[in-house]
Image (tube, rainbow, N blue to C red; front, top):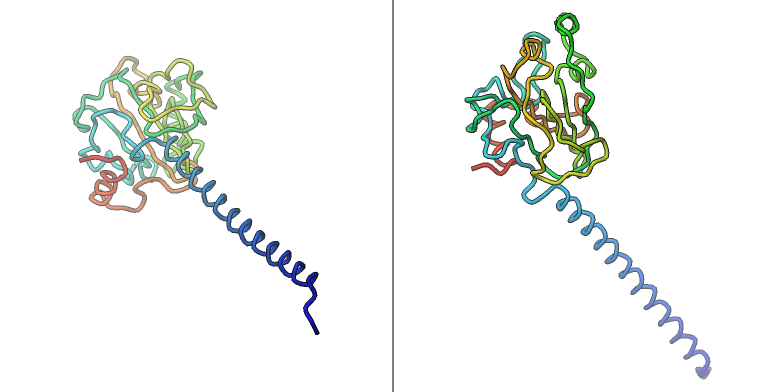
Length: 237
């Protein structure tokens, strides 16, 4: 049977439609890949170059094991979920009122601008209540005045025992890496009940998810392993 010209045209049209479909599918995959890459780059840009930094410029990881994540806390039968920076243990002076900066870019999810210090009776009652362990809500009180920042990838950083929060900083504020967010203090500690600047410290926590509910940086690691991973995470020499 001779091939009719119309059949040839139909076959060519069918092939063209198939080729266009393949090209469109490939283009869609390329676009999806580009969109994923752009999203990743946006996250990296929001976090800042080279990931996280320590919240006290020029500081090193605490020299004392007790000030590292995972260190035991006898009074509440638990462990510390973060780094505690105190004077003489952080390679830079840690003074009441000195600036604290965001460890990476992100969005503020907690900023206790109206924080009220506990009375001695309230503080002592809290310490008695956590003698056998602390709930997430009690841990929150023990931190004093805080700022929490949510970062790309679901990470959250916590900055605690602050004496003040940067003016204008509030829930929903977008911050960049290295931005001033507050000041070192002693809120939430016994020293704060005496007034003044005694016992200045900064508690800094990095959580892979929600504080007090998910995993904190350094959880389950030895002090040596925390320091080794910390140098990589915070780009330290």
